[in-house]
Length: 188
Ligand code: GRF
Figure 1: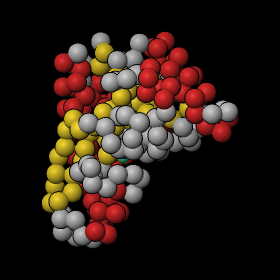
Figure 2 (figure 1 turned 120 degrees about the vertical axis):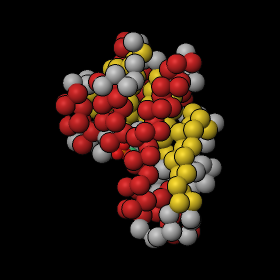
Figure 3 (figure 1 turned 90 degrees about the vertical axis):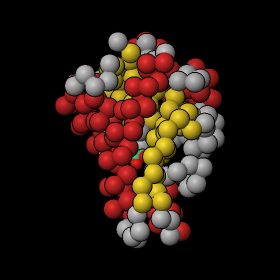
């Protein structure tokens, strides 16, 4: 069975969708670890429900990104991780992790990339008056939300409430992430 690592910083609804798909046999995979850069992330409580092992760390406890990423790489190696799924992980992946897991890290982003990169994509899109929103899943490289696109799904919205866009987008995210992970794992 393929092994996934999911990285999250907060809420973790995408983690839960992936873990539930694994538990329900929709994905022929296992979430072998949840990596969190906040020790109080709600995602950690979700992980308890599924019995997913958690590595929660505080970046400030390390001298550098390279140092904590080296620890993460050892952990992923020890678990034989096939694919790393970033799901609301609010940190740029550094050289150490990128080199070790080159071509094995994907991210989900709440806009139709390359439009609206970064942490406030939905708010910026609403401010712009966008009418077609969407979700993107892409390979992770050293750029911010800039790696090659794997999957996208668009939706129309003509209001001005970022919360509503988030709500509509998350329903799509949970489905699209699972479909995309499934495709990637089947091709390996
Ligand atoms: C999602 O909207 C995702 O697109 C973005 O961060 C959010 C994470 O949501 N990268 P959750 O923590 O999985 O609920």
